[in-house]
Amino acid sequence: MSSAVRLSLRSFDDAVRRAYARLFAGDPDKSPEMLDWRFQRNPHGPAKFAVAVADDIVIGMIALVPTRLRSAAGEVVGYQAIDTIVDPACRGQGLFVKLGALAQDPAQLGGAVLWGLPNANAAPGWYGQLGWTNFGSVPMLIRPLRTGFMLGRLHKSLRAIDFRLVGSAHELFDPLDRETLPDFDGLWNAMKPTLGISVDRSPEWLRWRLFDKPEAVYRLVAARRGAQLDAVVATRIADKHGARLCYCIDALARPGQAQQLATMLRSELANAARNGAEAALAWCAPHDPAYAAFRKAGFIPFPARLRPIEINFGARGLNPEGEAAVAAPWTISLLDSDTN
Image 1 (cartoon, helix red, strand yellow):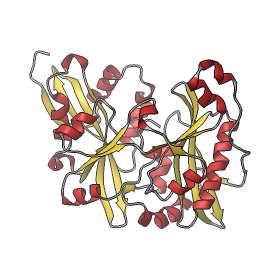
Image 2 (cartoon, rainbow, N blue to C red):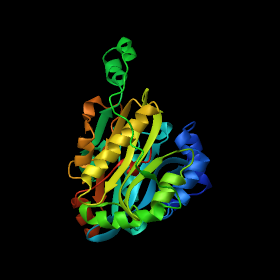
Image 3 (cartoon, helix red, strand yellow):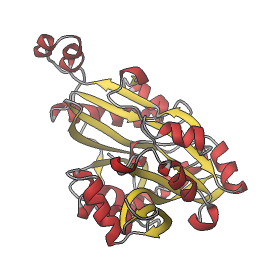
């Protein structure tokens, strides 16, 4: 690059679109439809981008997705940092750290918290040079659904020994769709005091996240008592990492309904196995109210050393309000991942 590198914080525009097409060429999660959905239609607000430009070409960027973060104490504005990338020809110039510093300038960003799920390459920069609090690897749980999934990892020839490890599905739970999703509001309001800090799961946001996302099909079911929702479970089946996996995207229940939630999880695992899923994955920390239900449904902690990829979790408060939020226990699930 012959000209000086210029850094700026900007909105989603044609230059950013072209940068995605060039820097993430062939990535189906970065299609034009996906970019429009994620960065322009999010009900929490439009995205911002920390970008580095040389010769009128974006050579590095960090996408900053707005997230309303709620807790029993109230709400703060946060941004999730995703899609951190520097052009391979421009690496070694410290651009990542410069972009990260720009991204967490509160005067320009306008938020109280910057948080994210950095991979192995990005984590040292965020934690070591940009002052993030390191919460460790994401709290991943696993539940094998077929014997072939586990045995095949011992030896390929053993994959043929394949039978189900879960029972039958219980068709007792109501599917939720765009029209019935507003019923979720009462459940969410009852749960908020138990969650520490989490991304606001309003019906509007869930509709965008689960029903408007291009080329993604989620299953969302609920347990009811009359018109009241007691628990919901969201899942998605996808072929990833050499297996057919059921992702337990989220599992939420009113206080005192852990047993009901465990029953729902077991039923959804059986439904997933019936549709070919070999194992189920979830994110759920021991302090999460849903953790007991996941364990009752047969999930166990998935050691970081055995996972197919490294995903970390961290955040930085950008003002006193944000620092207090970061210090609180966080509740995250796969619903908060930008790749599921």
